[in-house]
Image 1 (cartoon, rainbow, N blue to C red):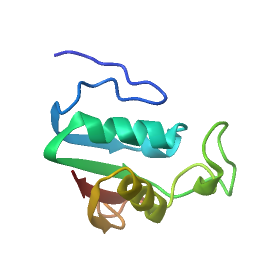
Image 2: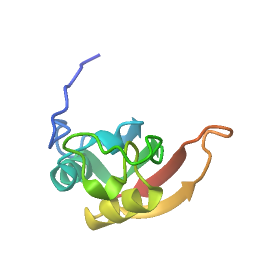
Image 3: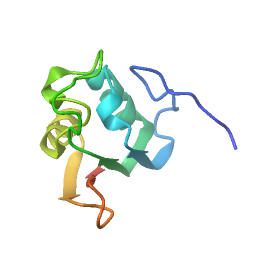
Length: 112
């Protein structure tokens, strides 16, 4: 196994190396959204998939330092995730609320 440390604006993965990328409770922490998303897209092979599990604001509007204000607090609305990753060039496949079932999270799936 090889561990690759990501950075604020990049996955640091080689181009077209991944069939799939999975981020759980991470996306809402990304501060360099456009650059990081371009890096995600570059890391996926053609037809590759991206799965994002995350949650909406639970802080009552307390925005963490460096996180874009459109998040609305500590978390991210699923519509913003979809809009940002579409803008980066991915196709939105589906979004499921309360996923996994019973959890206060959502799942957004994309394809390159």
